[in-house]
Image 1 (cartoon, protein in one colour):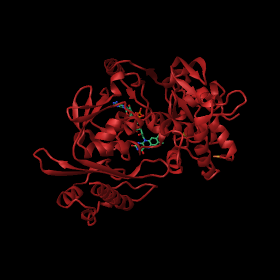
Image 2 (tube, rainbow over the protein chains, first blue to last red; image 1 turned 120 degrees about the horizontal axis):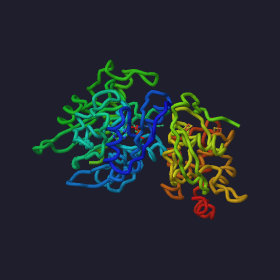
Image 3 (cartoon, each protein chain N blue to C red; image 1 turned 90 degrees about the vertical axis):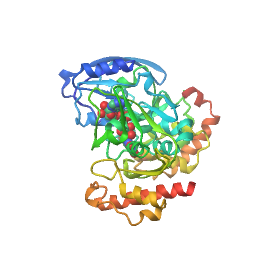
Image 4 (tube, protein in one colour; image 1 turned 90 degrees about the horizontal axis):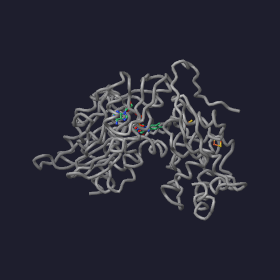
Amino acid sequence: MFAFAYHRPRSLADAVGLLGAHEEAKPLAGGQTLIATLKQRLAAPGDLVDLAAVPELRAIALEDGRLVVGAMARHADVAASPLVRASLPALAALAGLIGDPAVRNRGTLGGSLANNDPSADYPAACLALAATIVTNRREIAAADFFTGLFETVLEPDEIVVRVMFPLGGEGAYAKFPNPASRYAMAGVFVWRGAGGSGEELVRVAVTGAGQGGVFRWAEAEAALAADFSAAALEPLGLPAEDMIEDIHGSGAYRAHLAGVMARRAVTRMAGAG
Amino acid sequence: MQDSSFRDSSLQEDSVSKAIALTVNGSPVSTTVDVRTLLVQLLRDQLALTGTHVGCDTSQCGACTVHVDGEAVKACAVLAVQADGGEVLTIEGLARGGALHPMQDAFREHHGLQCGFCTPGMILAGMDMVRRHGHELDERTVRTELEGNICRCTGYHNIVRAIIAGARAMAAGPAVAAAE
Ligand SMILES: Cc1cc2nc3c(=O)[nH]c(=O)nc-3n(C[C@H](O)[C@H](O)[C@H](O)COP(=O)(O)OP(=O)(O)OC[C@H]3O[C@@H](n4cnc5c(N)ncnc54)[C@H](O)[C@@H]3O)c2cc1C
Ligand code: FES
Ligand code: FES
């Protein structure tokens, strides 16, 4: 690791102040990605601002018909939260599929979103559920938040404070984990519910597969809006040349896998309904 | 004695040190660390608690699993300064006097190890399963929960048996209250 200074502020204002005061400062959440990055010398922040002692970042609550999850809520907290399990069971289930128990005891929602790993799970939930990401400065629709591989619209001194998930409708997440890392080889979050004027709406978000990171699969959404069944997805195919190609699988493999995961998610919902 | 594979002696001139105070296996520890020090390095290199192992460079093997404030974490993915003020439990803190912790004893009884490299992490991960799922664990739960702990020797069968038995024994054994 390159050398850095370490800070543990006790309020959000202090954390924001520290990030603004130091040119090369970075927030530290659970460290489940950042520490590995530091070890490999892929990042060289001059200052780490640990968010662990900022009290307001951890809460999980229902507010105005939305589920509000603090940025420092750990995957284990979200997976076990009775509130999340009752109001958005697919989100609790997704959190329980991230990594392994020790990773879930440290890794956080805010860290996962800020990192925007193309194989991370939460970005798919945020897109499919049309979540709003709240920072110390503004509210950002999930559709505008993720801008590419490991890229988001966050400014260097901007902190994710909480994420608001609208309630209503029904969702399911199907994931094919890489057997070694547990990251998604393909993960598909399907949501079905009512749009603004009461019309039936379907959103399908795919992670783990696309070269540009998480994306909405428009053809699948249109097919499911017309006929909400796994069979409706059968004729569709994602372009293999747009999918991630690495030692774990080819683009064609990932395109196929994303289709399988989408059908599994739909089957689970149709079965449950 | 084995050395942690993460030791990084370059750029010492820029290093920032910080005084930390934590509890390790029930005893207070006050020390000064380079802020880059990983928890596993503090345990192994400074405190000579070498029962916590380092098996990978990617936080995937679980050999370094310890408890911080009662919860299993990978000590290679936590900075020592993040554990400042916390309570750390390692494999060395489980036995009471000459008596093994029930989870340790179950690994011996069910032959849940061969070379033993993964075993400290397996035992601390097993105890974390009990914390979250209670004392009656089924095989499927244990196998799923072990996704972050890799064993290259046993084929897992006896590890799974040991954790199921250890979890039950923890309900009965007085060592549980002492250790947790
Ligand atoms: C073995 C292993 C398996 C994993 N498997 C999966 C998996 O299956 N699926 C999955 O989705 N992920 C997986 N992960 C990643 C895990 O979910 C991490 O929790 C996640 O990537 C972010 O880590 P963190 O919350 O600890 O944040 P950190 O590592 O502390 O930070 C990550 C980045 O986000 C920034 N950041 C953190 N918090 C904030 C904030 N509030 N506001 C602004 N910026 C912030 C940091 O500066 C840093 O750049 C895995 C990790 C490991 C080690
Ligand atoms: S050494 Fe920590 S997980 Fe492998
Ligand atoms: S007993 Fe050798 S690695 Fe598990």
